[in-house]
Length: 390
Image 1 (tube, rainbow, N blue to C red):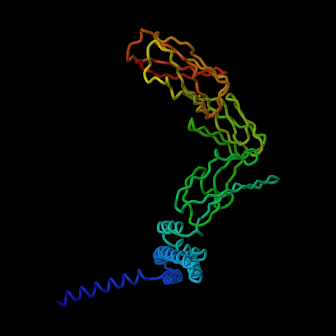
Image 2: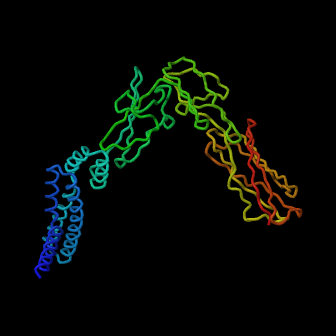
Image 3: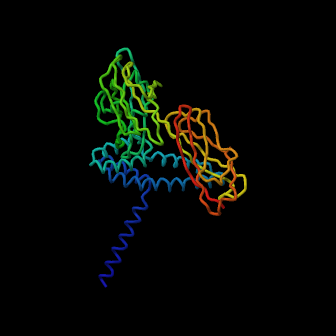
């Protein structure tokens, strides 16, 4: 019997303890939060603040209902008291000073724990949003260039630093981007490297180098000649990986617009350097359609349409299009098209090709077609596809 009484007593005490916790007012929780901060206990402060946030929301909701009912009853004293309570509750949310105190505790934790807790702070404080600034500035003799941009993401998330081919600044004046530094002039990270968003505001400084670079992502090769000066002669590498799809047509420095012919063997340096990427001509065909037919009918005029896509980095000019078929049962009415120009990364539609299938075509027969594309310089591309007779 005594045992049962003991269990009942413990249960009552637990219920009373739980009730005491849940019954704590926002004022009381706010005081506990401030005490935890003052004692340097980050984990306790964060735990209490989560309870405080819920309590603030609950009490604001209650006061809003009081204010609404007070207006109905024309009890303006009660109405303004409710508004005052709401204002006090809002002011219990984490302040800038609270944020700085908690961040000072977090950054001194073990790295993995610090990142986890900083992420919590990012979600719970409107005053915490670390900024990573990227300074592209350069001051060299009579030349001065100043530019900065910033990014802000959740601490601990990955950030890919800008690479040289993403930077559209005059390479003749700035040279080539060699890397990024925590201090000016010292390389700590490479262009394009992925880093982790720091927990506090940071600035990374672009490190410029007097150099001429040739970078070819298609060939997967690059060449950098360092420590150049105006008038130096640099050899142009041969990275030509022309094939059935990609045809090399020259080099371009996107920052200045300077162009080198595909047969150029040398380059004379201007200013602090240059950053060249290849120009490739490349075309393909897609979205072939004989709409409204899913299978081609016999003895019926059929219009063929398809897209010609410039997937290269150079514009295509004076492009002729011709369509042929090895099947003698295909009689073309029109079989060609023409584009004055298709810019890089753009497409053009061919929809004037038409033909008829004669009686020699059997039901279900697969019919081959070939599209030949030829630009004004004599470069050719071919694309083949098949369609089925009804």
